[in-house]
Amino acid sequence: MKSIKIIVHGRVQGVGFRYCTKMIADQLNIAGIVKNQNDGSVYIEAQGESHAIDNFVKSVISSPSPSGHVSNYTININEVKDYTSFEVVY
Image (cartoon, rainbow, N blue to C red):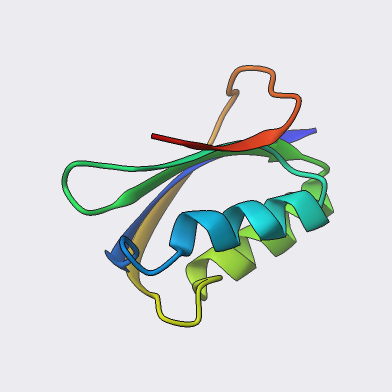
C-alpha cells in the first residue's frame, strides 16, 4: 500500500478536474480525497497499490480533465489516514 499527497497548480478549478480525478481514482481502486484550495490549487490525498498510485499520478499531472492544465505540482509520499473510498471534498 502506497500513500501520497499531491498539490496541483494551473487551470485546475472550474474545469471538472476534481470529478475527473475521482473517476480515475475509482477506475484504479484508489481511495482518498480531492478538494479545491483557496489559492486556486487542488489538494489530493490518495492511497492504493503502488502500481495504481503510479498510474494515478501520471494521469493527474497530465490533467484528467480535457479542459484543465497542470503547470506545477508537488508530491509527498507519506502516510495519510485510512480511506475506504475516493471522495470530492468541498
